[in-house]
Image 1 (cartoon, rainbow, N blue to C red):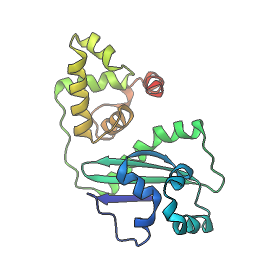
Image 2 (image 1 turned 45 degrees about the vertical axis):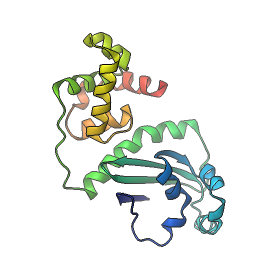
Image 3 (image 1 turned 180 degrees about the vertical axis):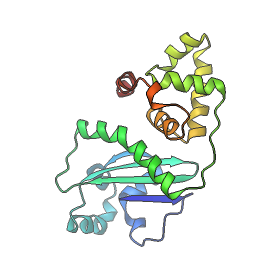
Image 4 (image 1 turned 180 degrees about the horizontal axis):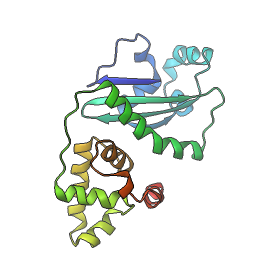
Length: 191
């Protein structure tokens, strides 16, 4: 399933205010394993009972916030268990789902403009380089790199390197062919 919300107002579905997943995303974005979240919100037992009735009480959710819009992606199965393997795969594919859904539902997006330095830093990020490596390559301070990375995240609506690269590829700011995907995935998995 997917929920896209504008600002902090969810759609008018009467069940959503009781959904522990949605409530938790109002506190923090990122990945949630449902069993953990359900334990945290003990006042939502009726909602969780309804989930069990429909066999959607086991799964993961990922929340992304970009430009005041939240997108929540749910992955459920009656037999889903917590797994590092599943979490790693979902960590890498969900930014692409998020961007695809934003393109579908939010057609009137504005063009993203990065400075030449931001493009250069993004290119190094997409090849798996960390901030320190980039600062050495470009002969500038690590604080300057962090400043530019923060601006890149802001302009792309990203919260991490994986999202930034996925969004940059989707917005034709960098070409997939120029990315060193193996090095990028290896470095991103370490951070």
